[in-house]
Structures are given as structure tokens and as C-alpha cells.
Image 1: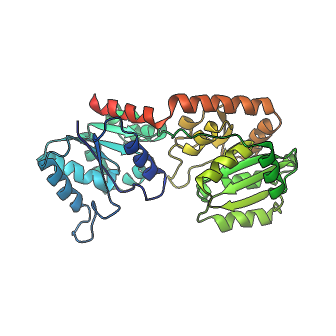
Image 2: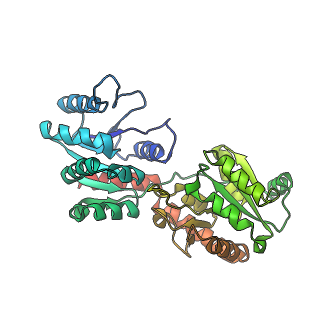
Image 3: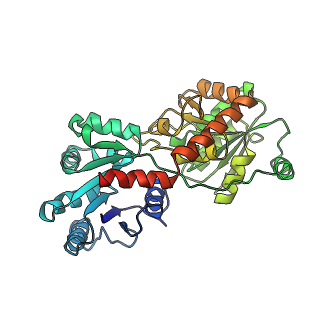
Length: 361
């Protein structure tokens, strides 16, 4: 089967959705079986058309006429789903809609969009949800769509992780001015409020967490706000901002730290679609503390691969930090179980095969 994927976000474009499609294509089990057209060079939407996405209709029409695909995967329900819906009436083909979270929330924001979204989803052959939360939201939107829904979580790439030597750990502790018995929390991601890094900082202001140190990697719109919180709570000796880091540094810091923490929360219909970084931390053998929000329940199993907390409640976050920081055996156990789950259930080779099997059936 020849499959065409159309998406507005694709590498080298940055972000979780772009990575999702890039890795899906990279690990697709059938060589030449998945063709991708992205909008990186304006191939799908163009200001030269009265309605930008009309260019997508032109592209689909041409490719279908040439026999370039027999099944269409739509990476963004609006506006690309509209083009797929219209074209499928004139050039007979089946299409599947892939949903991540915010894309669906925005697609049902107004009455006009809800009407269009319902039409697109009703005609779709399959609705592929990247997490259980968006699957729930689609069912709430229209229960008749339930039979079309399949949840296919993102995957991770297998990475060879070399344990840090004693010398390297000592070097890093000296560099960051950490004491030998300090417990190190680590976060990496965009510095936006939804990630919950502000709640971790607020929690660290509590006196019960005296030997906890916190490394935050990443950049984003709320960097100034977060640094202001650190100054407000006088935590300059406990919280260190690392800025943007390389992948190599990320994996080194996973090894160096004791606990990965990201108590993500929902803000204005924007939520964590899944949280690949939780699985990455697990892959490095680390336990995680995560917020019960969005699709995070799919990525983290409470008391097996990490701890799920109310992301708005700093007492709950404090309790989770204390539980893991005071119990080395629990940290090791959750980290080990998390690594086994990541390797057994979430490698992209397996996820891409599941994707193909779904479409073939």
C-alpha cells in the first residue's frame, strides 16, 4: 500500500509533533511505503492562493491522479483535514486523521470549526490519537466516532547510554558546587508555564527539602519569570539554569541526576500530549515525577515507572520529591522498571509497525 503523509510540522522544524512524524517516517517498516509532504517549503499552504490550504487540494489531486498514494495520513486536522475531506469526494481514497491534543482543542474552539471538524472525522477511515486524553476528548465531542479511534502513543529511539564514571560525577558535582549527599532533580524542556517548572521552584522553597538541588535545561518564553521566582524565594544556591543543551549533554545529565521531574499541567486547553522526555529519563534508568495532565498517564505508570502528582499542588509535589529522595531503593526500582518498559513497549521500530498494521487492516 502506498501511503502519503501530509503535515505542517516536520524536521528540521522543531517540536514534539515534528519529531513524531520525522521518526515515524524514519522507522516505517516498508521501504518506500511512506511518502511525506510537509509545509517546510510551502508545499501545502501558500499565500498565492485565495485560501492558503487550497494548494493542498491541488497537490492531493495531482498525486492521486498519478497513483502516488492509496491511503492518506493527515497530520493536522485543520486546515489539512479540510483539503483531504473535499478532495476525497472527487478522487476516491481513504484517509486517517492523526491527533495530538492542542490541534484538536483548537479545531473545536468555534462553532464553524466544530462543524468542519465533525464532517472531517465522520468521513475519516481512522482517527489515530497520540494519547488517551485526546481519544477521550474526541469521544466527548461525538460519541459516534468512538469505533474509529485507535490510541497509538509516540515512541523513542534506542540510545546507547554509557554510565558516568566516578571521576565525571565528582567533576560535575564540583562544577555545580553540589555536596556529596545532595539529591539532584533534573528538568529539560521548553521554559513555559505548562511544563510545571515554576511549581517545582515553589516547592523547593519549603524548608523540608534542604538537600535538594535542581538543574533546569531549556529556553522559552517564561525563562525570565522562572528566574524571577528563584530570586524571589532566594534559591540561587539550589536552582541552576543551564540554557539550551545538546542531546549528548541531556543524556549525561539524566545519568548525573537522581530524579527527573516535570509536573506538567493543562493551561487554556494546552496540555502535554504525551511526554517523550519521561520515557527518555526512564531509558536512562531514572524515576520520574510527572503531573497528572493530558496524555502523561500513557507515558508514566504511577508507582511503577515514576510518581504521578497533582501538578497544581506543591504539597503533593513535595511529598513525591521526599518519597524518592529518601528512598534510594525506590528510585532504583522505578528507574529499572521504567527502562524495561521503555525498551519493551516504546521503541519506534515497534510503534511504526503498529501504525502500519493499523492502516493495512
